[in-house]
Length: 116
Ligand code: 5GP
Ligand code: ZN
Image (cartoon, rainbow, N blue to C red):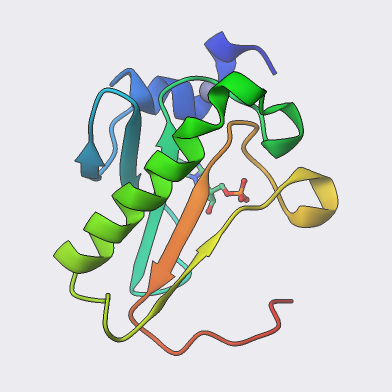
């Protein structure tokens, strides 16, 4: 999908509204429109990267940054001690529906394992 059509690029550019949780020059985090848990935040790089399959070596730093941002968010939302899950869905069988690399941050309830 072209970057111009990408819903998460539009959110990152402020062209589609979202309930923002965190932003900086590299990433943005916002509440999922269809939450699967009391806390369900989506964290994305501002840069359009389709998924892990297309991540380039010189883009690898963003992944570490996203996890450091997640660490901040869980503390702010008060689920750092109770626990949480970070999920990346990749490709069709992984359940990826939006073709812009993103991480789900889920918490606020007991999460089952394994996922369906
Ligand atoms: P995926 O299935 O690709 O791993 O996750 C995409 C996630 O993005 C889904 O959980 C879906 O609810 C969420 N989502 C899709 N469109 C929007 C939107 O326009 N706004 C927000 N906040 N979340 C969205
Ligand atoms: Zn995008």
